[in-house]
Image 1 (tube, rainbow, N blue to C red):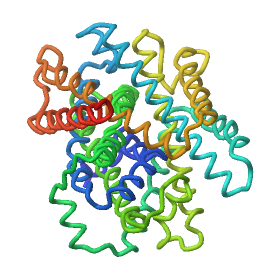
Image 2 (cartoon, helix red, strand yellow):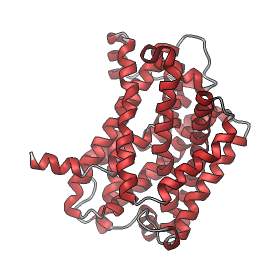
Image 3 (cartoon, rainbow, N blue to C red):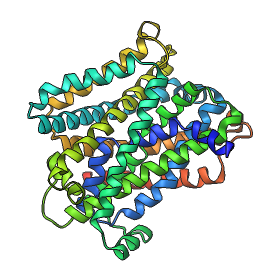
Length: 404
């Protein structure tokens, strides 16, 4: 009993990372996947769970064993040029996702309140910045952990729809593969939002904040597994709900209201309000993680002081990147992209970046000079390599279809 209690107390970076994965971009992506491909990608969602656990575990353990961040480890064993290339792509993907998430939150608030979304964008951004900058990391962590529970509303909604159980099981356990462009984009978007690059940098950085030691690696693994399982259970049921309500309906997903239809059985005429609460919670959970992962990555690359336990005056570069990410993200609202398109395609970009990061993690995690006796387990290597091959293959197919 005491061991179980200790493990529950140890929950933190993994659970927060898993909850943040179901951000507004994730909610929209999974909804689009369900609406456009039905139940046919549920098998990939199931398979993505061990893939996600393996990749996150590699990033977490590398940070714990080396007592360094991912940028520091990559720079030490490759070069600063490699680190800068990875970080540049990461920050671009993060800023687009932040902008899409902020736009989604402002759009939802605008519909709920009747106020023009553009007028709500800055207040939402300021509130997020305030929560992170003027509260200690421990307070932020507690708030983020409690917010993850609200995302279970999507599980309840999917169950109340009563989807055909036989169809659900067949599509979950038997792969349905298609090379149609829409299917490939949906699959890449699903992987990109499930195994998001920013999650790797965030959790690795937070393991340092937690100051876990080598002997606590098992706690970190339990935290990672718990967070990823919860995240993907929610994601699975978002796809199920969207597929049951929207697939084959002929209704294109162009607005946040279209996505909210997936919650109709649960919310009735209050569907959008229920959906809106989920989007807002997911945004407040994920945007600090997105901006924080960029801030940690850049600060560690240049050797700046970093961490949410520091005051602004003591870690100016770190907080400058954090605030800059939010402000640049606000500019996405002014772009011609619709909120849904920005949310969806930002995750496709993450899917294209994923193979590079997984390849680096596999090399680092299997290097005995770095990891000593804590090199990758067979599980991490098996599903890490599988993640690399699948994401690389999907990216190659998408590139071929775009060019030819």
